Image (cartoon, rainbow, N blue to C red; front, side):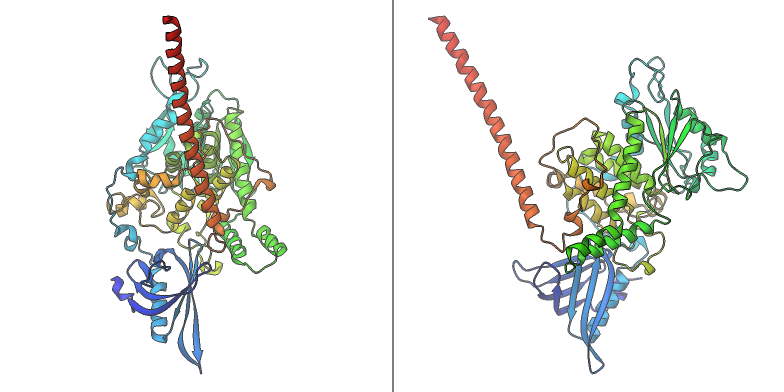
Length: 572
């Protein structure tokens, strides 16, 4: 298929552009294989440069005169939450443009997407596809405090025994051909004493083959693992290999915790008889039966945010009815429970929901942000997303094919907004600990956008298997390669950042939550004041650094003068 076959009117003059925050603009509309462009060809005028994949929904409103269509308005509801209207004067062009945008925004062949055509105009300093390789992340997880003696105990689970120099974790490539688990990567971290045969047996016991793997190792040696729920196979209630994996992780601990994020009675859990040392804890994210339930909640939230005419009482009622902030609260609460088990109990934790692709990843990721200060840096957050979401098999292509504007009846059940919920949770942590994060909210919004539409291949496909089959690493550019360029990264940093090595315990009281207005309201309410305030903060921080440097120089001058005076007095 050629893009030209779908573009019936590639260029059209006299098109009017409307949106919430700008005056109407008349310009020339151009449609390419991947972009919609509109330019008034005037200085300081609004221009439009829109990826077709950003379009979530196309709505048509024709103008009719005596039952004859005389043009109309095409409304584009975008995944970045913008709502754009194009006013076209003539019927033929109106129908042509609408048909082209509907076709180009709903292509299902990933190889036709923009990342496979995009070629960066800058020099790539670091290859983002190899920046966070599992082997490197594994080394970080078990290095330092994780693989040193802890209080003289050389034999703690996962701690290096300095006599033998070995560590009780290993890398396995049992899934190198994706036959054991189609959604896991080829390189995984498992207990050293567990054989590949036991892993295969455990995978057969778990939904989708997602057997327990290491997610994080706390500084006290407590381990966090994630998996899918056990399969509901009639007549099979146990798997000795699966039990062996968890018993090895348990080590000398008297108990471990299995945290179910799916909901009591909804998921299959491990039997008390065969996992007697593991306490079951239910911390459901919400009343979620399918991934699309989160997206339904998100859609209701955005619908309320876009209604600028309703009264305050009605708006607050709609906000509550969306259930979105309840999902945020439950996610943070579940993460805090797991973090407490690791940090205060020193006990291992296994987290699973249903398939281990959504709520499980929210919790394991938030736990690491709470406990591990490295995950609160810009590079650490990228590594976390790569490790816990992309390599862990979160199906970005399926979840983000449709967003909040597509009517629920037109969305498949595998649509979702799990990653958006995760980013909102980070925002809540940021508002409570504004000096503990190296990155600014700008980075979170950028990650939100690129997870839905991008010129980069980082969030393409549903799994590493699909990315491998399409050659994503060799045929596209990584988002991380772009973000870590010094001239780009400096704009993503938090001017108030002060490294905080401590655990951050957020408040999970409902009153502590805030609506993420910088994202959800940015196209309905002008954000100039927020940008201006951030600029002022940056100027104050820069001024403070200059004054500190000046104070240090003056102290040194004063010290030098004092020494000279002392020498003169001694000489006299």
